[in-house]
Amino acid sequence: MPYGGTEVARGLQAGAGLVHRREMQRLVQGINVGMTRCPVCANEEKLALTERYDRFSIYSCPACEVQFAHPLSYSTNLYDELYSSGGLGLTRVRLSTHSSMVAKSHRMIGGPQYLALQWLKQNIPTPSPVLEVGFGGGWFLAALEHQGYIAMGIEVAKEPVELLKQRGFTVAQAPVNGLPPDWAAPRAVILFEVLEHLPDPVGFLRTVHENFPNAPLILSTPSPKRWCLRLGHREHHDYPPYHLIRWTERSLSLALRKAGYADAICEYPRIDPAEFYSTLLGFILARLHLLNMGSPDLALKDSHGQLLVSKAVEKSPGFWLRLHDAGLAVFRVLLTPVAWYFNRRGWSSASMLAIGLPLGWHKDAASA
Ligand SMILES: [Zn+2]
Image 1 (cartoon, rainbow, N blue to C red):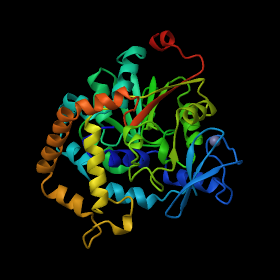
Image 2: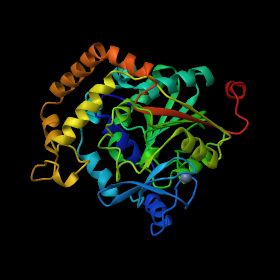
Image 3: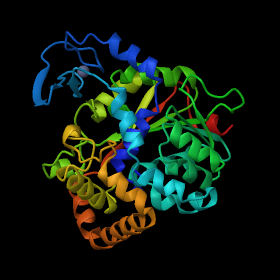
Image 4: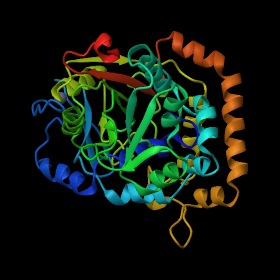
């Protein structure tokens, strides 16, 4: 995850940018909420109720190992509010130019994104077109350009599209099946921190595969082996209505195969000590009721409904960004031994990477 803003906001921005609102409503209505059924393998038997949270129940599916919220409900207001509430992620973009974003992109991306770039460099020649679906702050688009790829990004939300377009990136406000006609067919598709937000993940992956049948799909989602879970802490955003689905390697591979991909690879990135900072910051902000998640009704807002924390950021964005960067730098230096120790224990970065390979896809065909 990028560390420019809170990773949470980035994930949610990505989730908000995926499916047209009407399409999302159709997906939600299409699910029989009266009957509990696994959204990945459709199993209805022996689902285990593992947790209750607010008005949601969280079930585990013994057949595919996925955990999911019931009802699988989605509120568009939730994401609209998160977008309008700002945060450091888009603030940093506002203060950047195209070239400064490309130049510092490597510092703004996290473990899964590094692995994704590595995989691309080994398998897809430059300058091939690569599409990111739900690009949020656009830092991975900048990193793609830095590596020599033709980066294209889509989002349904307006604000990041306008910001990135003004800075000269190739972006559009479009759904997966509505790319601008003059764009080249992507040789790979990227989908970071999105799948855990969707009520019908297999249906969505199928749409991606149908639209780009020859392109590998590289995605990330919270890792079941992540260090903070191993320490007994589940982040405040890993609950419904934000995260509806908790993935494992098995369920993710199954979902990719059901969507039409012939093969799936899963990888666990090493821990970047900057994650300790992002997680701690999220924890503190949530505890102080300064975030819209966890308990949105209790979040501290002004009389216009703006979050106090985003109001503070708006007043002196430069100051908060410098403070944030200093925090990341300090954690990266001081907590490197801790990250090393956790990595040695087999614990992973906050997110895992999965790659869906289309039928008949191989490296040579991709570079031809
Ligand atoms: Zn299942």
